Structure formats: C-alpha cells, structure tokens
Image (cartoon, rainbow over all chains, first blue to last red; front, side):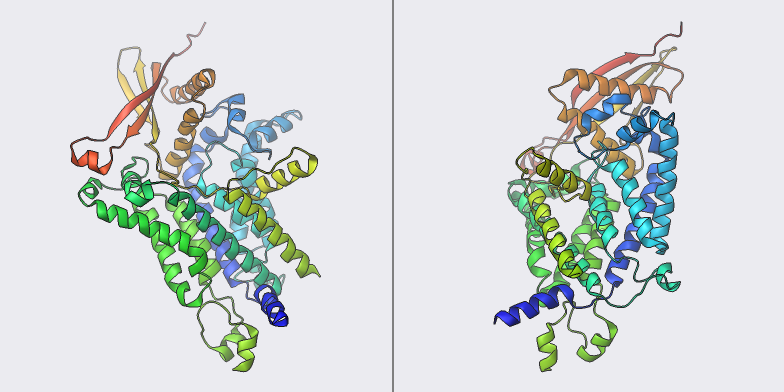
Length: 315
Length: 164
C-alpha cells in the first residue's frame, strides 16, 4: 500500500511529460502581451511617466509593494544623470524585444528573465494594474524556471534546447495545474461569501457596469431567475474547478465550462485580454496533451489525465 | 535530487499561493518574514483572487469639463479610450476611493490628472474635475421604476497658471 502510494506520488510528479503545454502557454501569453502593448503604447507615458496622470511623488502614495517599481528605478538612475524618459523608452524597447523573443522561443530563458523584469518593474504595485497583470506576473515568474522553450521554439529548431519529454516538464505542469486549482477555488469561495452571487444581483450589476457593459441588459430585470442561475453557474464552475479538472471523466466538461465562463467575460464584460489569458492558462495546463507520443501509441487516448504506470503495466 | 528540490520548492511556493489566496498576512517583521513577503510579492504568490467578489461594487468615472477664454465648454472622460486603457484609468480613478479619508491626496490626484489633461487642450483656461459614482438599482427596484444614474462624489476646479 505504502509502496503504491510512493509510486503514484512519483509518477504524478516525475513521469516524463512533453513540454508542449508549457510552450502553448508561452506563445499565447506572448501574443496577448503584444496586443496589450499595442493598445497601451499610445498612453504609456500617461500611465507610467512622472508627467502622467499621477505626477511626481504622488505615484509612491499608491505603491504598497515591497518590490521596487518604475518610480524607484527612475529615482535611482537619476543619480547618474539618466532621465526617466530614457528609462521608460529603454524598458519599452526591452519589453518588446523580450516578448517577441519569447513568442519565437529564441533564447527563451533569457527572454523570460528580461520580460519578467520589465513586467515586475512596470506593474507590481502600480496603481493602474489589474487582474491581467496579476496573472501575467504569475505566469512570467513560472517561465523563469520552467522548460517553456522545449517545444515549438527556435531554440529546439536550432538544437540549442532538447525537446525530449522530461520530468522537469511534468513538475512544471503539476505546479501550474495546482496553482490554477487554488486560484479558482479561492475565487469561487470569495464570491460564494457574498449574497449577490446567490441572488443574481452580481450578474445584473456586472452586465450593467458602464466600464464593462457590452449592450443593454436591462431586460434581465424581468427574468431574475436567469441572473440567479448564471450566478449559481459561476459559483459551480469556479468552486468545482479543482475537483472537475482532476477527474478524467469530468475534465473535458470542466475545461469547456471554464472556457465558456471566460468567453462570457470576453463578450459581455469586455475584459478581453484578461479572459484570453485565463483561457490560455487553463487550456495549456489541462487541455494540451502532455503525454509523450510513444506512450500514446501504446496506451491510446484515455482522456487528458495520464493513467498511473501500474495500470498501464497490467494492460 | 535536483527534482526533489524542485518539487519541494514548488510545494513551498504553492503554500504561499494558498496563504495569498486566503488573504492571510504573514506574521512578524523579522528578516525571514520580510524576505518571504518580498518573494511572495515578486513571484505574485501573494495574489488574491477576489475578482468581482464577494460583491460587485459601484464604479467611479472621472470627467474633465473645460472652459476656454471665449467661454466655450467641452468635456472628456476616462471611459473614452481603448478598453485596455480604460480599465487601467479606471483603476487610477478607484485610487480616489482608497484615499477617501485623505483629502490632500485626493486633491493632489485631481490636480495631477487635470494638469495632464489640460495640457492636451492649450486653449482651455479652466478645468472642472468631476468624479461620479454609478448607481445601479437592484433588479426589483428597476422593475419598480428606479433607473441607473451617476451620483456626484467629488468635484475640484483648477485654472491654468498665467504666464508672468
């Protein structure tokens, strides 16, 4: 019994896996960040510059992060006569270079380090940051350590990186899967703690917020049961995520449900990039097959969760 | 051995993720506690996931009303940008709510933002900064005839400094 548990534990964490799911997340994240850069670029100085919306030292009023941000960086470089404009221009250039390198998988590790540094400097503790920045920070931090360049990359094409299935890829995938499970459960439980998600008012309010609203949803007031069901559905999908994703029979349904939820956020709340990054995160962690091709040929398709080694041997 | 270290480090990281998700604060102010807090912030392991939770609040909107030397008036609000930019400006507007008890800071934010926007309109001599909160009735109230409205939350007025 004890030996079986140890074998299952080892298989869970170290059975060699393909790096394809990690590569899919790398490519999707880089594409989303490029789109974000396109929209934010015209307002870059307004948001981050000391002549922007929050001028001078006022910016420090809202930064409660222990991590130094753009304000501290600019102050530090000012001692050497480097202007804030130079710092911002340099950061923007580095950011774009790193995003494109990450997208192509060219010197992937270096690109991941550069991009993470730029992102942390710009967004950690910044007053303009929102949920998208939080999840991008989480993902980019993982990119520092995970073999995200071991598939679909120029590094593999040029022979700089091996694309063989590895235990490192499996450990990485498990960390991503567990992190997502914690995040959705926390999000669902937080929602369940308020009355608005039970009586449908949260759905009603979300759809009417002028910042997010896409269309006129005032008709919903005539069908409160519909809003209530949508609220319950959201709670079920988010709280059920850590259960559904880990049971092979429920995984596809859970994945489709969570993607559906984020499509709703995309179309009805207009949180486009946030919804895309969340879909990419869940899809790559749970929807992209990580099993080595040889194993698939012998085992066949058994859903997205790898069968324990023990069962494969019995067959 | 290397893998064991990686798995252990990963699990410890996930413990911090759980602490962050549960919105718990790490106690203590010694070096170790500060180092862990720094790491959690750097890795975003301290993130909480309270999106639209536990309830959906009322958003704020900042509007700038300009008057030029001839008395002409025009306006600009923070929602009239690309969605990504609107969301970021929206967070900045929310900074007002977070500083509700600190009038000097609210006034400074209003002045800072107004100054920035005023720079885009060289003919304008005055700017009136208005912060509104969107009021959404419940579904039952809406059926009973109440409607959505903007409620004025904060107003500040600034004039362009005359050149000597």
